[in-house]
Length: 487
Image (cartoon, rainbow, N blue to C red; front, side, top):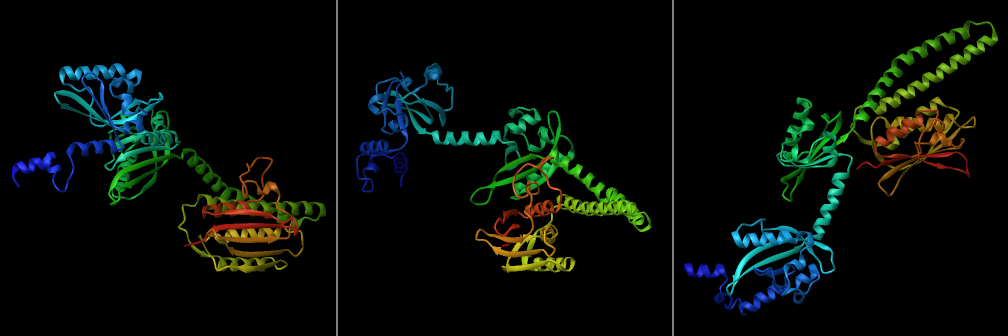
């Protein structure tokens, strides 16, 4: 092939278009191409008069080609922007200097019915029969702009600190919540390495954590941890994560950084730990002293009335010691570092708990009526849940010989239900508040025991929940433990 042949091939010459593989006239081909494209084409001359428009313009802006040809381009430009458009074209014609980049300009165009349509325009200058013309390719980007507005609405209105980074940690976007917390402007952080931004300048640990998070996320790994960051008028402990966003080939393209302010939660946890130590040591020791002296008085006092009073003191101390132990278990369950969960065989755990309770309460009848071969997600605390709920049914029964029936059923939704039925009095609404429902616990509406709370807390940690069904016909209660089935 000669250089001339190659040039004709690149330029799409008439000779090539009339070859057997392209058997029709060039002008007709391009007329059909322009007429059938889904993107709008519009050509104006040096006087801003529209000299050509293709049919797709009507889909985008409501005007037919006949409506536009011969009119001014200002027909399609919102009034507030018309002076700038006129000045820009006049300056280009006079000096050749473009006031904007003509490749991919986002502009509002005026629809025939009066509303504005966001369009992406690519503009090119060319000549035809000695006339200097400008042709724009129009693409309606309304849907894209709507998606962008929805994204910005979510991104900027979340309570979490959220940012978008390049894969090397350079900040691309930060939401309003994070900017407001630091008291900085967007331009102060965009383009900076995230570890050099204001939030992470509290100490070297914060900066190094941010750097490590970016490095690990850049390798495709989710990073999550806690750290303290700097704000405009306070510091905050945040649950900090950096998540990689990959393309179809698995290459990391972007990083999403999030921070949830857990300062108040950590403070409450600290207070709870102090209370835990108080319950675990001081209160228990003092109650043991009271109990010991009360039992001594019961044994040594001769006066019957005094002996009865001492017995009441001993019984109250024993009750408080038991309550203290429940509170300690509750605090242990709440404060213990995250435990690894594992599959737990429901039947094995249930049979062990029932055997122990039959020994402790020989007058009771504890029947396992149905046991599906079920395995749930849990840990060693699962037996505490079963023991608390079954023992609660026994000790609160009206009858001298309590009856408790237990059934294990696999549900069709991927969960396992342990149903514990008794014939005792119904659980009061005050005891159910906040455990079997979302009712607010108040000074007036609250339970006296901690066993149900302990069971609820553990089950919630497993990703399950406690449910309650009254038994108005048979009498009694039905407490249900619902847990995810282990895979």
